[in-house]
Image (cartoon, rainbow, N blue to C red; front, top):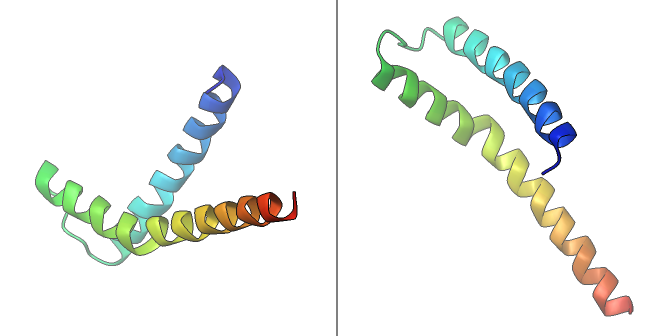
Length: 71
């Protein structure tokens, strides 16, 4: 990963963290201890982030497979 990519990733991760934090607060998720924070983050990642990553990556792999077939 290039330094520019790391910087861009950090920017997006910080923004995503703020969105997820605001959502957790709005939903009244307990975040009074490190364990509760970890559970809230895990729940939100599984609900909101992981499915989107999976869709993105599966589309990427499908496109690569199509390119190989066409070659």
